[in-house]
Structures are given as structure tokens and as C-alpha cells.
Image (tube, rainbow, N blue to C red; front, side):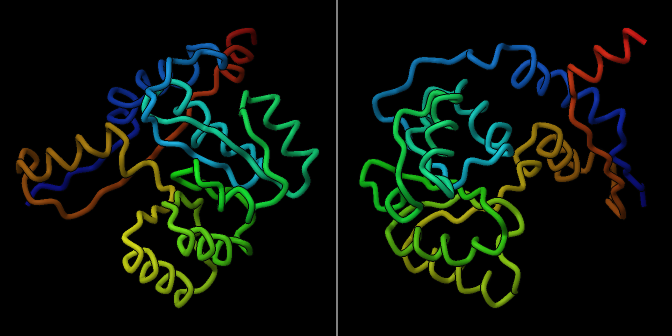
Length: 203
């Protein structure tokens, strides 16, 4: 049996150039025109991670639009919306979730709030993109999955690597048996930081 190891070199060759072009080598203000039927996303939480998870990717995708945000305080939500060009601010999480114009809820708050907010969102017929971990307890996660299935809604934990070009390519190679029978995988991933690279170059 062949042992296939996914190394840093593979990731650097396949993934790093794409990640740099999409996320860092374009100005943060770069946007594309939005499709009239674009999926409308509301942000629960004014978290820094949302910038990498949804704001930057959505700014370059015509079929997705970030339309609203809610945070622990209205002032924080307003400041976040102004900084990132989000058109609508809601006074609380429940109000945002009940907004009829929103299709998908992105939940980026502390883990302790994941279960209750996700449950509320699914009950109000929203698709949910949920930061990891989805819940503290196994039975809570199972309840959320059951509710999503009952409501015919998508509930997705934000493990973005599953959709990364490198991960998809590895799955293709395995399925095509290009590398033989897979016994183990060693994976190392990193994120390009232009500020750190610039500092290193300057010594």
C-alpha cells in the first residue's frame, strides 16, 4: 500500500497563490457588483473572524451580499457596519434573525451562545453558517442537526478547509487512486500574512 502524505509543499503549491490573490493581494475595499438575487447574509456578532470568514470572500462574489449586522451593543454594531460597509444594523440578534430580507445567518459570537442562537435561527427558517465549535455538548449539536433537517435548512459548521482547492484536489487524487491505497495523511496548513512577510523582508 502506498502512503500518501499531504505536506506543506503541496499546500503551498496549490493553495497559497490562490489565497494570496483572493484575500490579500486585492485591496480590502475591492468589491464586485451584486446580483439582484444574491444570497443575503446577516452577521450575528461583530467579530474579527467574520472579516476572513465571510466579509472578504463575499466582497468578491456577486452571488453573496452581507446586508446586516447585530452585536452585543448597537454602538458596536454601528461602528462595525460603518467600517465594513454593511448597510443595515439591528438592535439585537433576534431582530436580525427575524429580518425577512435575510436568507443566511452567520454566527460568530462566543461558543456559549451558539446553541440558543442557532436554534432560534433555524426555527425562523434561516440557513446557518456557524463558527466552530458548533456547540459545547454532543446532544446539543445533534438537536441542531435534527432541527435543520426538519426545517429543510442548511446548517454548516465553518470548517472552510473542506472547500479549499487543495483539499478538493487531494480527494480527487485519492478517488482516482493516483496515489494508491490511502493509509494516513499528515496535513500542515498556514495563512499568508503580508504584514509579517514585509517585516521579515526588511530584517
